[in-house]
Structure formats: structure tokens, C-alpha cells
Image: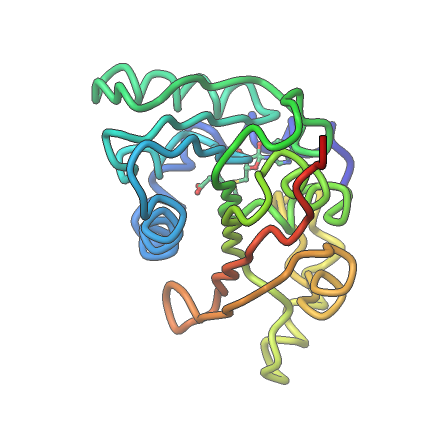
Length: 211
Ligand SMILES: C[S@@+](CC[C@H](N)C(=O)[O-])C[C@H]1O[C@@H](n2cnc3c(N)ncnc32)[C@H](O)[C@@H]1O
């Protein structure tokens, strides 16, 4: 899926997104935020923040930055932050996850919720998350991956050609993502309804720069 397809699809989805993908995805959002936001005063990046449904769950003493490539989704996140007076939200920026405009090691933790199977190049997306996260920091990904269940696997493969229209790749394979992302995955747990999604807790294993 090209970036332009994503921008077009999420422009169309933005009005109905909270209704369709709100509460049903909340368990994964809450679990991810709880992991990434476990200490006071952390600076946290959420990649593909969408309409900002996760923002109310961060602790008030954190500083949260969100980015998204869809202006319409981001506008809703901005309105949510203003309406709920979320003073821990440091900024919400229009930005491509594969070209983050932040310096190296800028965040204590980085999250991406339901984004990994949307971006055009998941390896590049993961590399950018590792770059901006400090060494030893936490990276949390929640996503649906291609199912092991024969029937679901078959359906997801059949839906794959529709990715441009439905806004994600239903046949996104975890094995390839594990290999290509370079992420050090410490825990994989089922998430949301029927455990159909997975939460990946990773530790950013890159070395600290020596000066
Ligand atoms: C399925 S939505 C998830 C939104 C939000 N994380 C949530 O929990 O509901 C995927 C989001 O990723 C954004 N996105 C997709 N590709 C992106 C990219 N390359 N850079 C930044 N955001 C991207 C989309 O615009 C959309 O808002």
C-alpha cells in the first residue's frame, strides 16, 4: 500500500473511525500504554496516533508526542486533546513514520498501535522507531498478524488484494516482521477480542553512543 493510498483511505475513514475501531481496540491500546508508560516523567512517541483514542490513557506526568500522516485523523486527535484538556500531550504532528523528524534517542518509549500493517515499508518504520527511542527504551507494537488458523488464514489471504481500500494488509506475517524489523521482542501476548491481535513488547537493544 502506497502512502497516498493510506492518506486517501484514512481521509475517508476519519469520520467513522472512532465508532468502528474505538472500544473494540481499547484493550490493546490500554495494555500498550500501561507498558510504555510505567515510570513518571517519560517522553513518549506514538507513531500513527490516528484520532488520538489512546491519548487519555497516558499518565498526566508524561509528555506524549503523536504523529500521523493523515491530516484528517490528526485533526481529530488535536480536538480530542483540547476537549479533554490533556496537558500531557506535548505535540501532534503531521509526519511520515518512515521519515521521523526527530533526533536519535529523543524518546523513552515508542508505541505503534494498529499501524505496522498499514505502513508501506514495515522494516523502515521499525528502524525509525528504534532510532528515535533511547537505548534500553521500550517499544510496543499492537497489530493483527496473519492468522495460524487455517480458515482465517485463507480469508485473510483472499482479502489481501483489498489492502488499498480497507487501509491495512490483512495478511501481514509476524515471522517476516520479526526478521526484518530488527526489534528485540521480549514478550508476545494475545490482545483484544479472541486474542486475534498481538501485543509485542520490545526492548530497544541498540548501543548508546560513546563520546
Ligand atoms: C488503523 S489506524 C490506527 C490509529 C490509532 N493508532 C488507533 O489506535 O486507533 C492507522 C493509522 O496509521 C496512520 N499511518 C499509516 N501510515 C502511516 C505513516 N507512514 N506515517 C504515519 N502515520 C501513518 C494512518 O493515517 C492511521 O491514522
